[in-house]
Length: 114
Image (tube, rainbow, N blue to C red; front, side, top):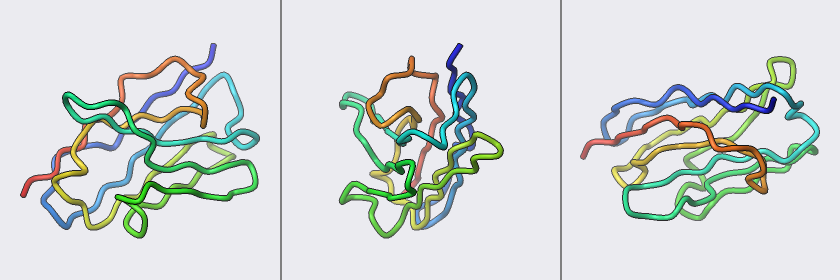
């Protein structure tokens, strides 16, 4: 079965950094587009960053220049390195394919204090 497990979230001060991990099983992430999404309370889930099989990356305007998406094909793990965090980055972060085709995991909570 295909499964995604997010980890690495936590409470951090504004300006701080976090590194999120997404462990995938049941599929090889190196041949498909993978992405990070986030959802704040009362808001829709939004696409934050993506990386395709050719390692081309894309970012939302709000995080471009501060976040970096990457993957380790040998570990079948997706990462999101976050720098200069802002309170508006607070939310639950999820990983999935670029089309959201895998059942959503529980995500990992990121809370940025002002």
